[in-house]
Image (cartoon, rainbow, N blue to C red):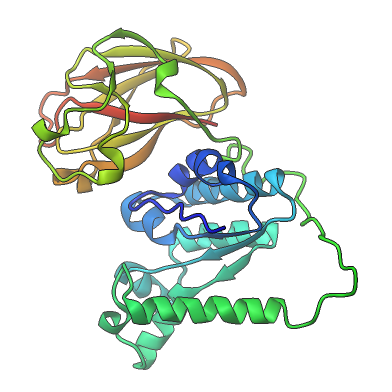
Length: 317
């Protein structure tokens, strides 16, 4: 059984949040392929801490769920990452993901460095590889590297009556706030005070491109400033998996009645697309029960976006 759980544009934070629902919830997993190097870079623009928190969230959650699970982390690549590799440095997402891979003894498929080295040697061009979304030649390169990895891992025949052996799990995480307890909380769990409604948005009336996978899904939506809701949750972090289009606005989040924090949902790719992304309102809470208060607000002088917010799922950690 093969499960294709990829969602374009999303980063490792989103991956950690949806792991239970979109991967582990599909049934037992023996072999899991993960790639977030490019989207942690060009989409999310994550700093090292977030790259570690997202990837460790995925790995530690997987190995807690199934200690026998084999995992391969692949690094795809963009032109900016190639320049960084050519300068002798490691792109930030790759550095973060490698730290996690080494800590948990996870196999990696460093396609990014292979592409960078071949381009530098003159044996490959970016066009031939196929770009950020590789063409047939680029995907074949990745396939061959995975085949080589597996041939090396399984070079020797299994012992007679060989039994499955659990992978060792480090007692402590690299970062205690990593997203290994991340999970969705249905938007229906929120208590609406004003301005929000649950249902399928009227996409035909909204400007911007839409991706079909999201256009028939119930969301918690507010179109104007003044919308307010609250959500009770247990954990050490809270955020939301949202669709942010040309009309995406700013929300004000406060935890347990604390100081409100403004979060702009608009992304640079939102200008012409209703764009999926995860925003964390607070990822460094003390573990326990908390209450989120979320408001849509108007911001004077803002040159982009509007006042809308559309939540697919809340993400608690």
